[in-house]
Image (tube, rainbow, N blue to C red; front, side):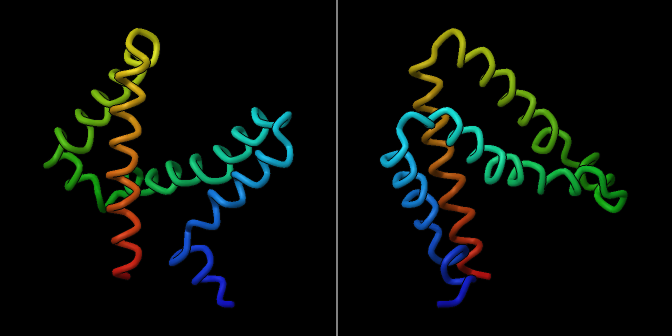
Length: 112
């Protein structure tokens, strides 16, 4: 089987692996979460930094400050305040936004 098919066109393999490891080793839930964040989430976030650091994008960022700077700052502040003061609502909004983001991203990858 082609690796591209498994990891890009068939990403359901990741939750299956996660669920299997969690089911077989429930005592390591915290460690599994940390490893998953480090391997998948942080690399995902880190992949966007070159966009902000590349000199060729500076003009684009300056032209669209609201979308590229202000909105992310609002999201960060909402996340910090929401997590500590209205956790249930924050988690619902977070997971809805996550579903939207991942679906759009997966659709874009499939189009590639």
